[in-house]
Length: 597
Image (cartoon, rainbow, N blue to C red; front, side, top):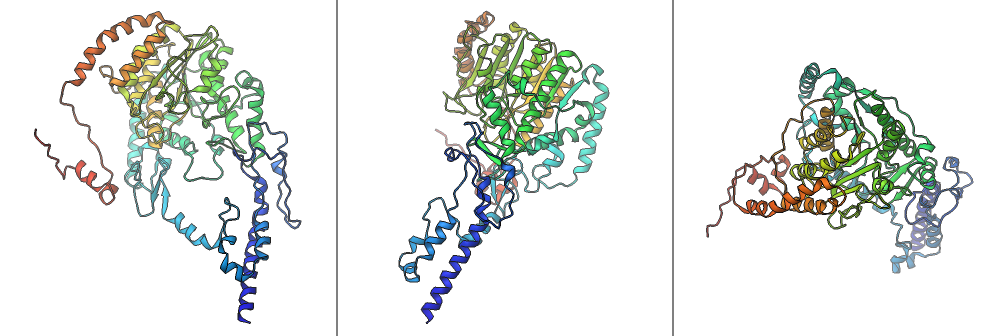
């Protein structure tokens, strides 16, 4: 009697639990995610529960979805599992426990593990600044040192990184007073800097978080906007342009019709992925149209003379989006749309300088046969091992446009201000001056900035400001800066603010003219000059000079010299963690004695 009662109780509980789970998930499976595994589904399956009142009509039909968007509608395996377990006796359950396990390897839903799941979610938090995971007991991010309760989204990079929002109001007011005093020193001719921004672009976000927050997130724009507001720059010293969605006819000049439709159809789904890292939700298509429209209108404003320069505070980014595909977080190519809009407004030649740490493969593909648009990119390449793998020095353009694609491919991580400024003076500026563009567009990704979790390079805000100042002289000051990548909020907001201050007429503040490149940077520049001098004779003198000095340069680098040590601030969290030895070493509490030979 006891065994029969126990058997009925166990069988009943298994059946009830699985029946409830099946009812809860039956409607959710209709609005599944578009991923690489769901390419064989062509239609939408209706809810199997006749009593379900869930409205799935907004999903629409997927029969018209282009092949570049893959829809994944997961089958309802829970009912199959329930039927299987109702046929198993209590004795079989004891002897063959593995039968009740994962009959489907992908199905790990087990209510017995829910408490552990909740515990696992409680013991960690994700850094607002860099998205890295940290234990709940930690107060500062183990990766970037940002405080757990950072106010960076409220005050931008002016918020203290190692403390909570304390004594910040006075700092903010003092900053605004300083910047307002600077306005009086800036001439009125430099005050016509336009900003392109619309809050609807913040709605583009990943619906379901994976292992950690997606790096291309709405907080990127929020941090920059907060920094500009705290500094009194925008609103204040810059003026906004009205937002407009790009038209289909304008996009067709850059992208294929299939690619445009693939982006547009995402407005009918809850969540989808073009590639494993390029997401879209129902707001993404509009956000991409707004970003492209703002960039196009900024280019027209500058060419027409209504604005001297401009900054496009937009997302999603665009320089990876090619003719036929969306990829690398990018949906529409904003820089390409802007270049063609500038030519429609009267510009004959447009220069695009891409300093994002990743090669703009989409922009290169669009213009590699076009002699009226010169594309120059400085990026990590590492013999094609760094994403997206394109952008080697010998990729120079095709079909009569050889020399109008210039790639400066860094061979390693850690590239900093010295290498970038050196490449600008030896390669970028001589070619740009010979090209004589009517408008210069900067694809301004700030993921080569110091502290970026993806770029792993060392460019400072002063370095970005210096590069902006150098390009400001190329096309008579007609300069459009378009935001691309950058995933450390403190780095991206401080760098963008430094660039906009240069657009407003301020000095970069740090002179990097006498800086020397690294040996790897010198080799990269020499390789580029050896190729591009065949198309740009102006580079011949630079190449000959550097080649003759390369041995002297290498010899000087080998000589021991006293270098001024840069102060390194150790996060206070290191004091009690695994990095406590490094913390005390940086604080000078531990001295390391060198062994004498």
